[in-house]
Amino acid sequence: RRGGRNRQLVGWESRCSPLAAVRCSMEYPQGEMSAPPMGVDFLLSQPQARERSRSPRGTGGQALADAFGAVFSAAGGPPQQQQQQQQQLLPFAPGVPAEQDQQVSTEYALPSNKLGQLLGFKGLTIQRIKEASGVNRLHILDKDRAKYQASVSIQVTGASACVSHCTRMLDALLAGDQTEIGHLTTYLNVDPPLIGKLMGYRGQTVKEMTEATGCYIEIQQHQDQGVENGQPRLFFAGTPDRVDAAVQLAERFIASPGSRLDAVMPGAGSSAAPPPQRAAALPPLQAPQRNQSGQPAGGGLGAVAQALLSAMNSSGGGGGGG
Image (cartoon, rainbow, N blue to C red; front, side, top):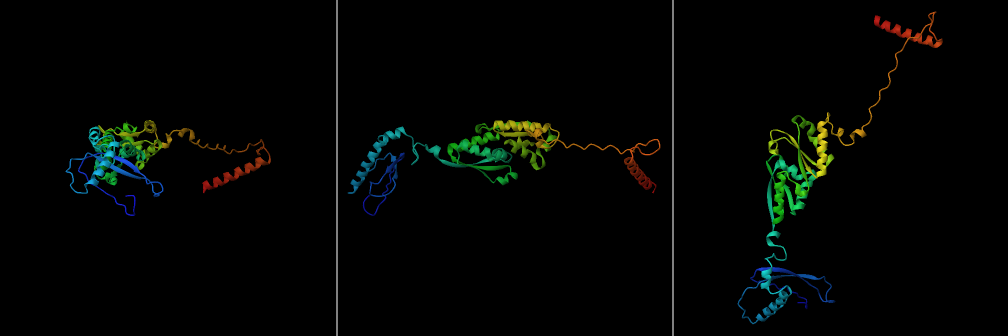
């Protein structure tokens, strides 16, 4: 009711199955109220046969049915035609099938030794999986317990189709395939004595390799990591250019004699400072030459040098005799 102070919201119930939802916009007459337009949602449905009311107030229901008949006609024809042309839709979500729009949540059991591969370099891998699958939530539950238990739970929430897509991507990640998010994966076999060199003190060397290349690098040396015949290896995952740079850096570091990673980094040879030069050694002190009379040649300076040599010889001889 537009007039009067009291406004009532009239609701009704119909025993029918929904067919579609229609969004209408209602505006107040100009000058009556200063209010924004108001949206109204109508649920179009197929009415079922119902016994006509014998109440004297039944004329109001007929007027309401006539009003909605016009809405049905504007929406594209009688309800019977709409039921044949459209599938059953969710209320107020026209055009989206019910089984695809339904929000579901599930937990995926991920082996603990695959948690690093899921995270990737600074969490890039899990973020790209979430974006590519379209899920609303991709969260690791109890990440701190990965060190003490065989698997961790990954919570996946979103539309049913998106959750199924995300689950398939997680299965592919366990198999070493990350191509759907644009990542390349490869391996590099390493001799067992070189594992300590690659790992460094508390894993510092492999961390420096990861930071320098922007590629996820993992040392695998156990059977549950896919190692066969006890052959350790390096696992690389990332964009193709970063994986190539990381593999080349690892090969140079393995072939180098030292244990410092910065010695094989690109540009390390040109930026190295030249070694300091040693000072030239002084010639040994020699006795001055003497003339035929036994006196030092050269005058006064020769005499001074002779005196100094005599004093040094006398002190040294006295010390040795004592």
